Image: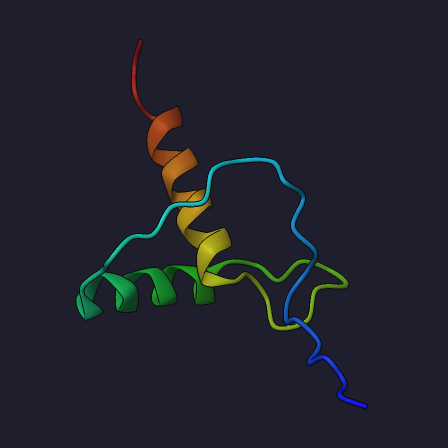
Length: 67
C-alpha cells in the first residue's frame, strides 16, 4: 500500500488569481528587511510570509495613489 505525501500549506480557496513573478535578489532582500521590521501578529508563528509581505506592499502602494 502506497501512502500519498501530504501537500504543504493551506488548502487552496479557489479565489484570486495566482501569478508568478521573478525578482532580483536585491528586491527580495528589501522585502525581507521590510517584513522583519513589521510587528508580529499574535498567534502567527514566524511572522509574515514573503507573499503576504509583497501583497501588503502592493496594497500600500496602491493606497498611496491619488485618484
